[in-house]
Image 1 (cartoon, rainbow, N blue to C red):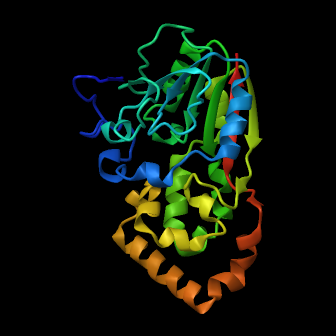
Image 2: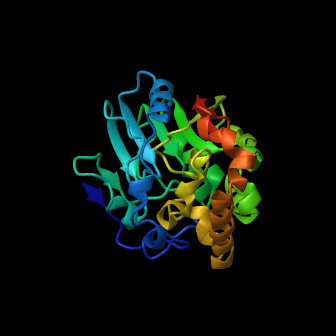
Length: 266
C-alpha cells in the first residue's frame, strides 16, 4: 500500500525527495547497490528489543525493515517507493518533520541512512520521539571519522561533502534527548550495503558509475571530480600504486570506519 500526498511541499524535488539530493534523478537502480547488510540488520534488531510496532522514517527501498515487526514506512521519494519489493510494509508519503501519526503510536522508530537528508534535524528527531513509546534507532555516519577512507586521497571533495551533510553525533544526542547510546559498527569486507566505505577493500567497485550514484554525495561534486577520481583510481589500480599503499585493506575482515548506530530511549 502506497499512501501519497497530492503535492510536494516547499523544498521538495518533483519526485518528492525532501532532502538536498534528488532521488528522482539518482535513485533508479539504488536497490541494486544498497542492500541490507546482515551484520547491521542484526545490530538494529537487537537495539529494537521487544518492540512489536515500528515506524521506519526515510525508509527508501526498504533496507533494514525488520520482517518480524508490524512496520509502517515513511518515504517522500516516489523513485524510492517504486523500488520497494512486493509484499513490503505499507508506505506513507510524508517527511520526517511532519509525521501523520498520533503521539506514542509506535513501540519503536528506525531511521537508517536518512538523517543527513532532513531539512530540519531537530524537528525530525522531535517527531520521531513524539510518535514513539520506546527506542528510536538511527543508523548514520560520524562526520568526524569519514576521512579514514582511502577515498580522501582520490576525491577529497566527496568526503568534505559528506562531512558537511551528516549531522554531528552530539547534535543527534541532543535532538533525541533522554538516554542515548552510540555504538560504532564495524564494516565487513564483503558488505552488501554499498555506501562508500563498504568498498574499503574493493576499490574496483567504485569504478562502476551505478555504485557511485547510489551514494548521494557524488551528485554534488561535479563531473570533473568524478572523472578525475575514475581516471586516477584506474591508473593506480593498473600500476599497483593503490595496492602498494592500501593493499592490506583487501584482506582486513572489518573496517572501523564512520558507521554509527545510535539508540535513544525516553
